[in-house]
Length: 262
Length: 290
Image 1 (cartoon, one colour):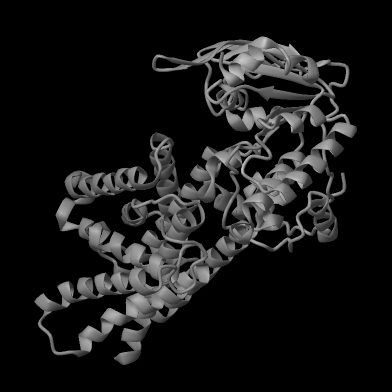
Image 2 (cartoon, rainbow over the protein chains, first blue to last red):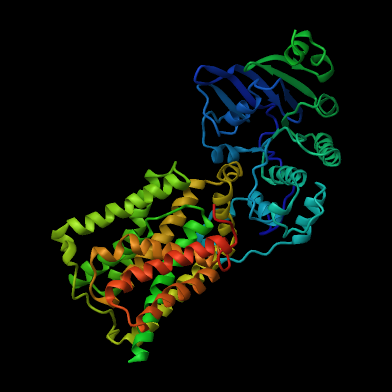
């Protein structure tokens, strides 16, 4: 790669023949007496968008945090493209090919849009001496076009603290997507945003779908899920209670019961 | 007479400038509320002084002070790796008190409260720094080099990572960055420069004792950083001149020495209160005090 050049939307294609991109095997996590994740088992296949749904408190975000290394599981195993990543550090899991967003965006409020893109771009920035000696020159037009493709019509020098919540959500997706990854984990991408931003996020995700990206997404908006997901996994009380195509799964009685009660 | 006094002030400003800009790297850029900086200053001063008295060349004494300070800062950041904010501040303050106690009580090595007199002035290849004019040049050269290194670093992509640690450590970790590594690198670099400043101080004053590296000077350096503004090297430079020079005005007022010392502390306190009330970001701060 040419130094300073930008590779957008970088799916790591190292293990194309592996159909199981992410494997969750009997994962348990409890907080005191509460079993937040209680023997969770499923597989995420490559090139599919899988929605992870369930009522509040089902353990979806806890599971996301375990997968990405922010929480350690009590037992069970997690494999990413065949590699055991159980209880590795978050940065090790990220560098193994995991990219994620958060329900409540986690950006750097005093930094600019451009700073965020550079952080996600590669890991050359961690080298102290190299950064002291070498200047960096970037083709900013490419970065500008990239963030515009996510619907962010702001100068690259805009600080994150000056962006609206919706624009921050879009930026968090843009940097998660820019980071070299095998799988993208999106935690409620349209939660808390207005209809206009929701439509923009929807368009971005539908583009990902057309490009056959591997994505695991937590979402509550059923219409959105039907349009987007190839497959739906339903969790309740820390367990998987259903797994299949959206139209079939969302009609299952146990799923209706979990969402609406008896 | 006045020019000698001015040169003395400029040397002290240069030394405190190194101390303050390196502290801004950890507090302002990396967001680590490090109150142990004055301890690293002391470690550098004592290491350099003790080696010089053993007859080692000045350059070795100078860099040894920085290296030992950096190594001990790694120990500190390693044991405090899971602490943040106020908890980190208290632990690092505790470290400063421990270092002070060691300097005070390890009398076989440090002579305790009697201090170490007769620290030789630097000498490099026959060029000696007995004159304060020449010493001022040495301090300026060292301060400018350190400023340029820090400036280049904080403006680079690496500098953005340090700011990422300050703003959102988890967000940075999920981008694949080892945040602990960034923290210890920032801390070690700052401690290294503080150690160098300590060496410059010891060889300039030629006498050191533990009281120089205690609470009052921690407050002084933190006041400089806050008045200058977090994450601003330029602001720190301006603030160093202001904070060192303002209390000097008291010297020209006919006050007894028993009033002079407390008077300085009152001035630092007043400046801090005024800054926090009317200009919370300091002179040129880029981020809020939190």
